Length: 364
Image 1 (cartoon, one colour):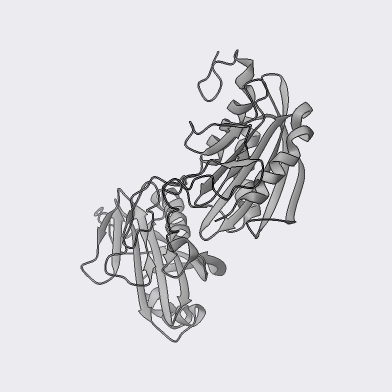
Image 2 (image 1 turned 180 degrees about the vertical axis):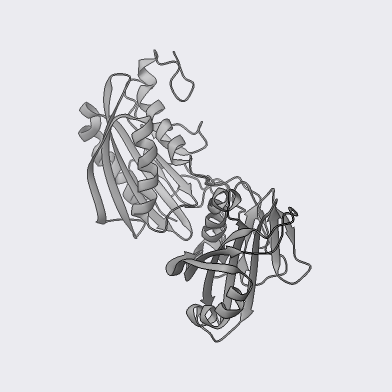
């Protein structure tokens, strides 16, 4: 009999790491990009998995769009299309704040539509790491799909201001079907957007060759690599490294599969860490038997690499065995990092101090 990861359930010694891997897989059910191993945009900035560099001749920012969308820079404005869905992006000097810009252009925008309807106005959000306002509206527009009739379209627009410029990201698609279908695309484009002065847009200098493991805390070793990862991750020297899933992970021994992992993702359907975990939790409830959330610390005072973090502790049963999980979430640049500690109920307390030490030793 196979588990959700395609492994044989009868191999008892691997149960803990399999369920840990399941959590990793569930964390990636959202359309996110795992850390490392991607091509670089101009300036050596990693391109998110499944996306392409759409910056064009733009300066001061990096724009990424899905790699199967068609991109046109010929008009001076970035235009990307996929079927009848369209994304446009423009950056220009302006003294106006986002709300002022929207109010000044609203009449012209409304004139493009009949039966104009405002669905969301001036919602506070982010474009990359910068504050932005989001507007959602719909209305009857021109005959774009060639069926001889004017059609209803939905529009989502992000407006952000930084360094004396306005940045306007707009998504538009037929309201019936396409608009909702590609909503996650515009969320991904907005969340993966980088300003040139963002920490995430500044490539970390590689460590000298052969320096892996140098500077590790006493009793620990480094398992991260400077040519793949943008962080330093350490585990106890007697733990076993497990990188087969493409993530930073390790376990105690062949007889004790207590494990830890660190995953880096682009958030696409959440504006806050509690929202991000809420999306993960939906899948945990569907995929993990007896999922129960025990602790939710949304103002966790402990910090990881000097960053505020949120902690969630929950239990679930797998193959008749009860496991306890501790997940700590924190943000660095435009990325969410998820540290997961997985153990049986009996082993959880015994290795918790080691898990805490690994968590606190993470650095960038």
